[in-house]
Amino acid sequence: MGVGIEVINLNAWYGTNHTLQDINLNIPANHATALIGPSGCGKSTFVRCINRMHETNPIGRVTGTVRIGDLDIYKDAKPVQIRRRVGMVFQRPNPFPTMSIYDNVAAGLKLNGYSNRRALDEIVERSLKNSALWDEVKDDLKKKSGASLSGGQQQRLCIARALAVDPEVLLMDEPASALDPVSTSKIEDLIFQLKSQYTIVIVTHNMQQAARVAEKTGFFLNGRMVEFDSTHKIFTNPSDKRTEDYITGRFG
Amino acid sequence: MTRIRFQQSLDELKENLLVMAGLAEQAIQRAIEAYRVRDLSICDLVSRSELAINRLEREIDQAALDLLAMEQPMAIDLRFILSVIKINADLERVGDAAKSISERVRHMEKMAAVDLPVDIPKMASLASEMVRKSLQAFIEADAELARTVLTMDDAVDAMNRAAYKALTKVMEEENHLAAQALNALMISRSLERVADHATNIAEDIIFWVQGSDVRHHKSVILGANDPHAMG
Image (tube, rainbow over all chains, first blue to last red; front, side):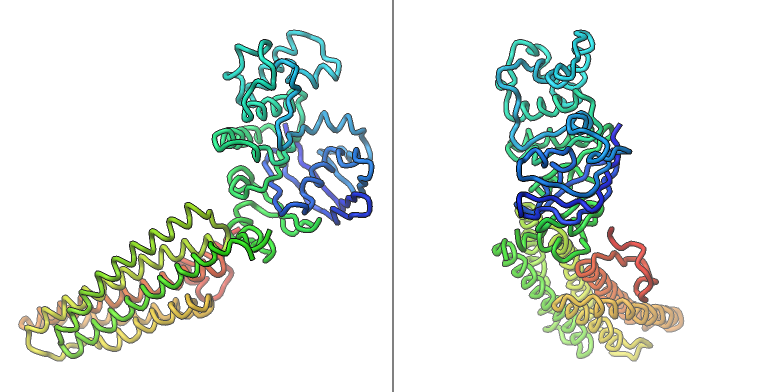
């Protein structure tokens, strides 16, 4: 099951560039939360702070508190532990090209020392079913490589890979921006199904997508969280003029 | 400012709706003038304007549909287009009411002029003022002005009820005036509907400007907290 994410006074820097400023918000468990905003507003940096990826950049720095469930991730945990609890899917599907479909999904588990063949088979099947890819690849699991799949299938394979380690949170950074409309709608349907089991945070430039998949939406601008509210409110009657100007295309 | 073409399309939509509003308002004024002076040539003008209103209604709906499909508007733009679609339908109905009044005038023209216990010009003046004010609120995006329209509807309703009572009494007691009384009653009913359409238009303007759904809530009209505000 997913857990809530509590963010308190989060600040982030790239060198001297203060890219996130005093972010405070509560992301509800088992819901999809969309983050929108113009390029460079800090939304991708924000999700990278939730799984401690930001600090892997040599000039990246973070202050503040992020709690995933009861775990204070900057105080009580190491980055590797966090990555097991927080899966991430990127804009461009990035399957391991030389590995089979099966090995792509099992890769994270094997890295964590899993070797029980039957348990692995079960997890791979469950993950591929949860990512709505099973029916399309079940006969070729070990014959075909991840790279042989279509773009949309590769992205669902990456989602399966993220789900295989049984995370509580799934971060998605523009997961459908490189996909065609049919593949996009499959990813969106998938998000809709997955949120009953995981807490999903999705960064997107596609506001219709945010409106379709997320219950909560946050609008970032210049490194600050301008508004965080129900998606319905954000897209029909936002409280802040800057949010309205952005979603109606008056800037951005 | 981005999406310049989209903003231009919204401006065009607003202008076309104002043309529609002008035609509908003029139709009502003409229909009442035809009633006042019993002039059938004015009734012909009302009939002709109805054709123009109907054509414009279709054009505005099509333009609104195109914007919804092509531009996928959000927030105030989405509320504006939804309001335009609804106001457009109400204005078309105002045109229908004008036509209906002019049809009654045609019937009455063949009958002897009698003094009936209903002040149609006064009722028409109030209903027209509601339409005018609601359109002014639309032009100025003024939700407060729109709220004043909502408070005027009760007066027209009361006049219609009084007309119903007085005219049915005429029909019962003075058989030879029944036809005239029935026509006057139908005109009164049409004017009451015009006031209802003006009320609908005012409600749509409040929705567009403030995002509040004030339909069917008197307390909201009077300024109490809105239980149906979006969010």
